[in-house]
Length: 185
Image (cartoon, rainbow, N blue to C red; front, top):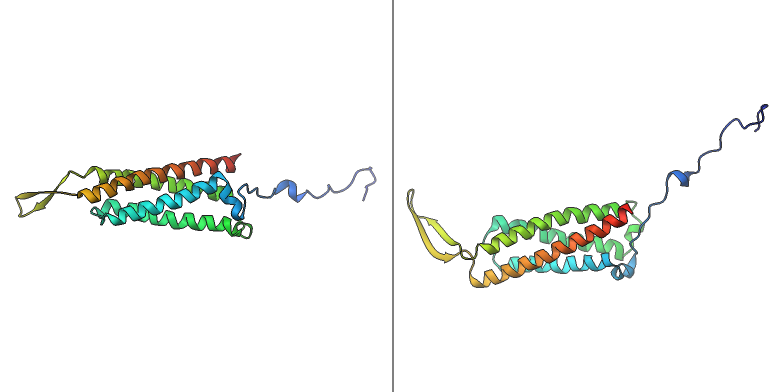
């Protein structure tokens, strides 16, 4: 439709692909995810997180206020990381329309912050090994018993849990860095 002046009356419609580029997913689906650094870190997160969970549970949780958070984060992160890995292993990411690079970064960053706090709380629990237990016998008197808060077996388990909590924190930090590179670059 050319007008009398020689130009067209309407501009051509915009190209939809120029305005809405498809989401780029750089993590592969299927077993190929396990051959990437991100897949390896997710597997290590699950393994180390499960070890933290088992080791803290084996101590009998002598300080429920501190170790309750450690247990909550380790159990929750272990199952959510397992679910996240299954989404990529079974190719569900192709069926669910989300920005997986952003979700990957946000998930790993949030769990990294939580696991860093978990590591600090578990290390604080371990540092209380020689701390004596105090019982209040009456209103004005305090009786100090010579039992330590953690016995030797619980202390050794708590040391191992602190080490694995640190290793898990490092894995989540590395996953966060890799996810940020995929998301922003």
